[in-house]
Length: 337
DNA sequence: AATCTTTACAACCGCCATGTT
DNA sequence: GAACATGGCGGTTGTAAAGAT
Image (cartoon, rainbow, N blue to C red; front, side, top):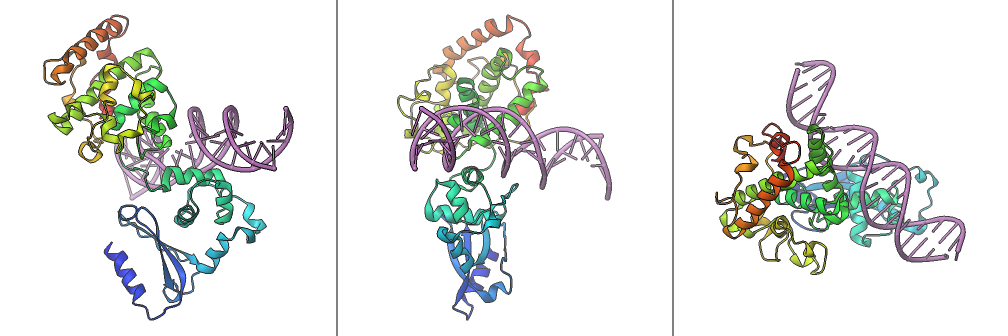
């Protein structure tokens, strides 16, 4: 940031007043919308596409191009360059990001094919849409999937399957792509290692009766005893009205889901976010059969419910075939963390 | 230090639904 | 109603970075 502001001070102290270059500042942590500044050509020397990219953790600074060219790009009527029809593929550049961000800031979302053309991007409308929704959108939440979010993903997936966009609706700031990636890299991989299908009853039961209670336990441990009634959803959503009263999610009524999606009440995102540790803590893993009520793991008023679940698990899982303990032992429980 | 393997995730693809002409 | 354009979704792939050997 120091470097950034130092640069800006230099810019504005310049004796030149004819600004011929445009500077786009994208700094989501400071402002939700990009800021435009105009730079003297002196700053840019002879470069027509000088690009300064300062990754300072919080701020990305991009110098785009000559204003004249930029203005031309926004004039759809004059867009007629045939050679622009060859589409670019692959990773987006900071310049492309800046152009798309600026275009959306001015014209809004939607009409992506037109956006791609008018902004002068050699990208398909689809590509622009995806880039915006999955990466550039200001409210995209980055960083590790929290424990609460993990719990919510597991629960919602058990209910809705691979309906990623639907699941994503309940994790504000997370994209369907991100959730899908999480599922594939973490959950499916684990199922593969356990040599069972991710959709098998065996794996689903293991998730439901071991993994998810374990997550609940960890969330409670991380958020303190007062968070006993707090939940993944309540912690992830900054606006509980996001869940329609008659929605599928609101109508879920099983014990686990009540942990995940309770009555809307005011636990804030900030207070309950628990980042997932990249390192496992297998040493504190408890055998599922030891996760009994009365050990302080669950709220007292939940004890009967949990005991019931425990019995349910014993009879429905352990009774037929491979025991959960052997399926989900300390060697493979690591990935839950 | 070099090479190989694994992981995480961005991006693309194909299919489908919907809207417009 | 057919043809086309567009957007949304889920599946898959490519690849950079990190980790292991």
